[in-house]
Amino acid sequence: MPAVLCRSIFLVSLLGLVGPANAACPAHPAGDYEQIYCEIKAKGGGTTLPSFEDFRRNAPQVQALLLKRPAQRLGIEIPKPAANAMAPTADDEHRSQPEPETAVPETSPTPAGMDNCVLKGKVILCSGRIYRLATNQPNSALGEGVLGESNTLALESFSGGLNDEAAVRRYLSNAYDRYIAKMVEIGLGGATMSFTRFYNSFHRHETEGVDFAERMESTFRYLKEDKQNLAVSGRLTDELPKRIQECAWAGRAVIVCDDVATNWVYVRAD
Picture 1 (spheres, one colour):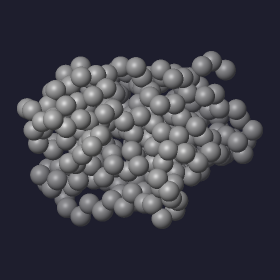
Picture 2 (cartoon, rainbow, N blue to C red; picture 1 turned 90 degrees about the horizontal axis):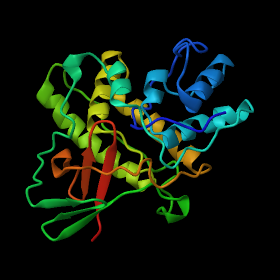
Picture 3 (cartoon, rainbow, N blue to C red; picture 1 turned 120 degrees about the horizontal axis):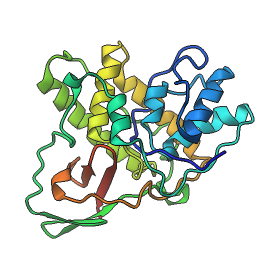
């Protein structure tokens, strides 16, 4: 089986269960992990896996985490993610996007406030403070109990109207900040989804009557469980953001940069 492909974005959407067998799979799935996903579905396994469209948007390392246990039960070998594995291209992203009216700017709506910040590769300097690029961490480097059942994502369910754009953006801005912080906490800071994908995932699920917060909680639980047994490489790509304009705050101690296809998280070092 060829070496792994793809490239991220997380979280992930990672949500939504599919229906029977491999009904949601394309005729010719691209790359190792999509092929394994469809093989598992064809064999009647993977009831906890997200829908194919959600699955394909995840970073290769997250895809491997999601596939690990159902693949083991069926005796299917999973290749390790390549250190420089890439996420879906902009064209791939466009094919699986919701309708254009749900499209949003490429960064979080949190007020940028980046005027006093300078991007220097793996470091961002803001008014004398240092923010370092977050990478995926081995479990030995994590805080005690962060992969346990008691550590939850705990997003609030959205209670407003989907047509109230201001309410949606307020909700998603707060939810995204928490999502990023929690992904860093469980050692997956190098495999997060962009705000654009987070936003579109929310609209897709809520429009279908699926509680976005509950589905994200389920996915977070699966990631914690699987990360206990599957090592991940530090970064998905050697690429780095090119402009500070691609960056915005995600809480007081975190900066997120993205070009939609790739997401980078910087965490305050002091």
